[in-house]
Length: 111
Image 1 (cartoon, rainbow, N blue to C red):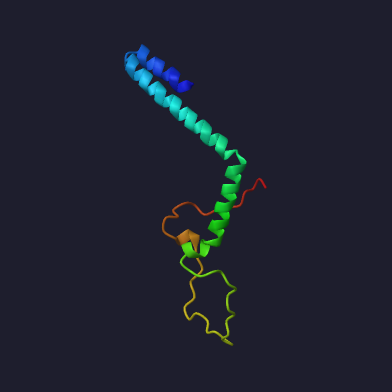
Image 2: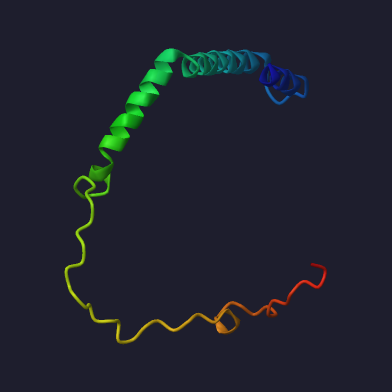
């Protein structure tokens, strides 16, 4: 394992003593065993079943997380002629917006 090799290098260079290396090596071995167990679980049929159940619960409870009721079709606008916005937004002009200090785009003559 790579971490064991690095621990050996640390002992060789005098950064840690053998007792510290043994303690850290045991921790690294435990971590490797735990990660291996997690990987085996994640590849198991049990994990697949649990993931599906969790996904179904998330989908079923999505409306609760968003703070609203279950999704329904929107009601149509019953006003015969809604009034238009008296002050529509002006068309954006990227050449005059703040933060766009670059040159205007030109067409590529190579196309």
